[in-house]
Amino acid sequence: MSSKNKFRMIGIMSGTSLDGVDLCYAEFWKDRQKQWRYYMPYTSSHDWNEEWKQRLNTAEHLSAFEYIKLDRDLGKKLGQLAKCFIDEHQLKVDYVCSHGHTIFHQTEIGITSQIGGGPEIAAASQHNVINDFRVADVALGGQGAPLVPIGDRLLFNEYHYRLNLGGIGNISYEVDNETIAFDTCPANMPLNVYMRSIGKEYDDKGGMARRGNVQKKIFDALNKLDFYSSFGAKSLGKEWVEEHYLPILKQIDRLEDRLATSIEHTAYQVNQVIQNANNLSKIHFGKPKLLITGGGAYNDYLIDRIRSYCTTVEVVLPSEKIITHKEALLFAFLGCLRLNRENNCLKSVTAASQDNCGGVIHHIFVNQEQDLNKEKDQLIDTQEMPSFNKIIGCGG
Image (cartoon, rainbow, N blue to C red; front, side):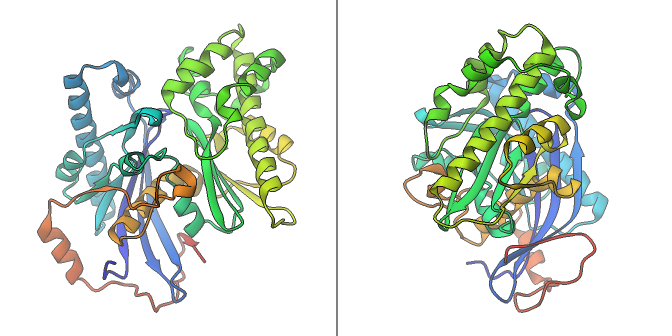
């Protein structure tokens, strides 16, 4: 266990939907009841330019040499973004925690790869780094995804269901005190693919999809994909979407109908997950809350369809800061748990052989940590949570 009373971390998240990079600064500590709490005063988001979108979107086709070069270049880019963020807010930071950008995720053959080299992030940001959070779990036979459920359980447990609508949707919840989590279905990824085909980044508030008509035959075909007949730990990647999902949607001629059908499928699958969870649970709630975060939370039509299907839960959209930066926050928290030598990946979620503490530490600035440890922490674990005016969360 670390002797530190407070962890000051940068979280960096780059999602498969290519909508950009999210950064946050967060502090984590334990209260008198030894429950984790957090304080997230600063966040930032950066769009990828066209060059970076092209490089990331075609990375799976690169030669080995070009792939390694992209890994290094992206690490340098992420490190530069972190340094600008740290300098802008004059932050004192223990570690920069980066998810990286997923290019390959085929855990059935033991492969997952998130690019954005840790040493390059460290050198460019001038701070120690934790990254590669997925590889240890995959080595232990797990899916390596989703990773955020431990953070959901410890920091957002006032919500029974926690749904993130990124490129791929993922959900976490507890059944009889055991955390269950998995990827639900494609969410923003197919929508953004089709919008980019007409020169737009996304369907603003789902306006085009709302004008479309759900094609029942295609909707039924999507729901019959083998992924939805399997239970337990499971995850999706870009490769699966391109091989299995998009070819079915491609049978629809009209763009608006493709968008509407994909959204209908996403909403339907979310409700299927919730209904299955309700059937499994021995403990029943009056009306449990469903927290929705990620870029899909800004798609009004998608949220309307989820509300239409999920009538047994109260759908909650939090503040814009949490919607956009919750995943960056949780990867900062995964780094915190890694430093504190606490498990940050659960076998009940990933089907690994055991719970594990993942993340590769690039500790290249020894004097930096010594200097930080000399400073007196503003919070110690016997103090109550202060009355900050910024975003604060409680894992109680």
